[in-house]
Length: 432
Image (cartoon, rainbow, N blue to C red; front, side, top):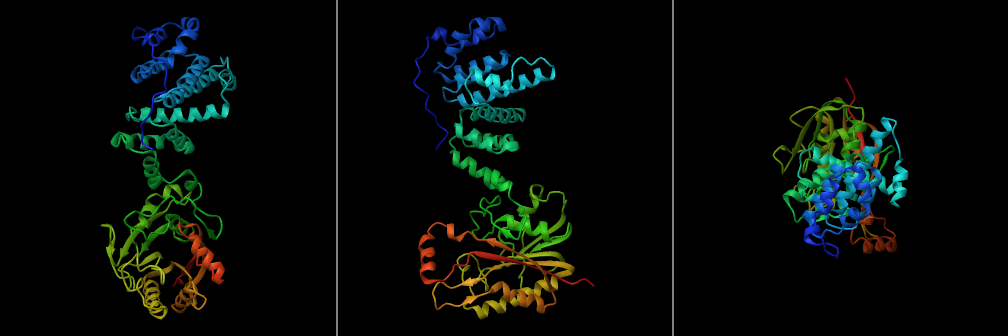
């Protein structure tokens, strides 16, 4: 849906009467009361958008009575474009006026009474107030709202759902629309979610248990790098297992998700106040902030926390280059994984921790073997002198992926469970 609109079919007023609303509003409050029916019945009948906007702005500047503003907000909502925008601004002003009266102990009407006069449920009206305050936030930031006032109702509802971040949402939306006037609502919201995540994602970053499922990823994989895991996995692994100060390394960094998540740590670190030094390496760097290094060899620096998400056996050839992704069989894969664990063990400082993120392998056919990759990695780590300290289990969401119905049915028919869980094993290097 593009940000276009259709003006509702309203009877046009005479040209000489087009701005009568604006002229009448310039009078005193008592005059407005006397002319209330005539003035406000015409408020929504202006066909020309610029005339409507001018009338709405004049109402905002001159009317100070909540009940009249509420009536005007209701009439504004009868038309688009601009109706949703000005309804929100009018309700925000109503809320501000009532708050001011309350502080001065001169409150004549309650919010509920104003709502009752215009037959608007208080909860609905509070939603309009949130939208209006978000618009005020944009205006205070000196960002143009020319295109924003013609945005569809759904955009303001999306902003409202962000609660305390509604203003930030509308600022991002206004900037996006100002740069791309023909942007669709989906494009605007997707851009926000890619950078900030949805409200649900922001509330659900750090998990309270060892079962991690992320239905609304905040840090999503980038379009030009399909192999990224959700950033929430890094956030939880850092929160629970990383030191607050030290060197943290991702030696198989991919698109650099660790950096994105750590840079955004204000959203998940709570009171931890992390001050880590982040280093990223990869055999095939695809970002200028990632250095080239083969993770099967010890790192050029000693680390206090290492996170590795190796290519998964039998599942990664189409996503990555390198021997691990294209191993011809499980025996070859294990040799390479063992080299990886040995190198990372040597790269840890005493007391440092290694996080290894891998799923088991389940063949789809009855004759296929199952491979417990996390258990084999556990054995390699223990043989290197590391101590296992914890594990978390992460849903891969494969049952819900598009086109999974056939595979799901085949799994039940063949009595072969699909691999739908990754295990994050955490090991520690003993101190001196």
